[in-house]
Amino acid sequence: MFKHLFKLIWNKKKQNFLLMSEMLVSFLVIFAVFTLIVYYYNNYKKPIGLDYQNLWVVDYNNTYNPKSTDSLNIFYENLRQTIKSMPQVKEISFCSDNVPFFQNQWTGDVHYKNASPSSDQYTVEDSYKNTLNMKLVEGRWFNKADAVAKTQPVIINEDLKEKLFGTEEAIGKLVGSEANKNDMRVIGVIQGVKAKGDYAPPRAAIYKRTDTGSFHWLGKIMIHVTPDADAAFEGRLYKTLANYMKNSNIEIEHMPNKLKSTNLFYVVPMIVTLIVACFLVINVALGLFGVLWYNINKRRGEIGLRRAIGASGRSVSSQLVYESLILATLSLIIGTFFAVQFPLLNVFSLQASVYIVAMLLSIIFIYLLVLVCSLYPGRQAAGILPAVALHEE
Image (cartoon, rainbow, N blue to C red; front, side):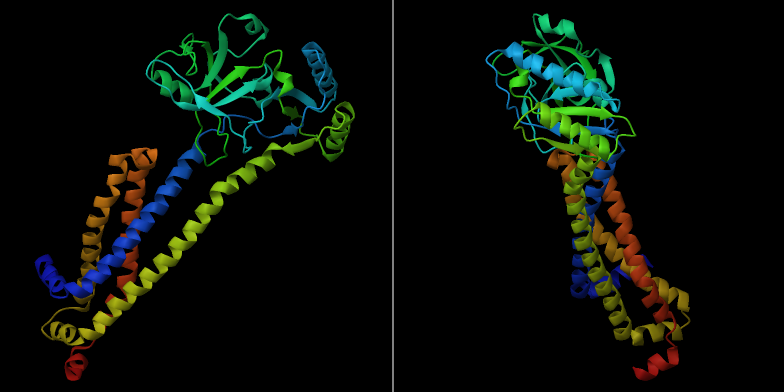
């Protein structure tokens, strides 16, 4: 039977070549779409690494510039105590501008032996971990004793640990910058934080402790508030900050809102891609449906002859469906050859499992599309009466 079907396909190779080309292009586009969806879904399943609910971010510019660093530290310590005295405030922490879900990003290479991966670099206080409710995996967080440490203590996340040490122990290892490759000691490992939203993977990150001069350039305050903190409290907080930091531009933002806006950077391109892919699939489906319908009208004599010599309507319908599936299989073999190059060549540095799952989903989708488009024309072919078809011929 299949030998006969291949002969029929070969006899109409020019017409079938166009149909196979449509299926091939559809497979490649669907493969790209499913790759994007699988990649985003895998990232979405990973824990976000912090508690962003009831977390506020205060953006300010430092307008207080005393000659003495001690005076500056006392100024901001008094501000810290003023804010913490409010009943709706659970924890507060000053930090660098590159807080999660914001567009600011500080990066640099971290060196260990032959490895030097790029990573996000944060400057944080001892209270930063509790303010964001970050999860410590190994070691410990910063404390006051680290201020007099001979070697600068740092904390890395799981992603940077894997890139630097693999399966080795990270605690106590010396890492550094390009200028000095042994000037920092790892004291802790935290869970990765998806700083760019739900659909982006956690990036390698290293956390450094603030020093006595950090208040000269720090520009963000992370405040963890209670669930009952409302707009009235936000107004009081803003008034307190504005009265304390004269002539400073102050802006209070809520982390859940920042997460939503950050996610849009990934969701919008994905929606646009899906819309384009849907239009393409609809066009291919209509083209496939039209070609099969045209084939039936062109082959009415052949179908009528087959019915006249005893072929059942079901067998005629099955023949058209099998022909379509064989054409789809030939297209998918070519398409799979191109698709398999992505995991082999490590294109875009994605995990091979992402491409493999996307490839399988694309194959299933194309088969279902071809099957749906060929069922109705096949049923129409099965309903052709032998006498009518032969008379028309």
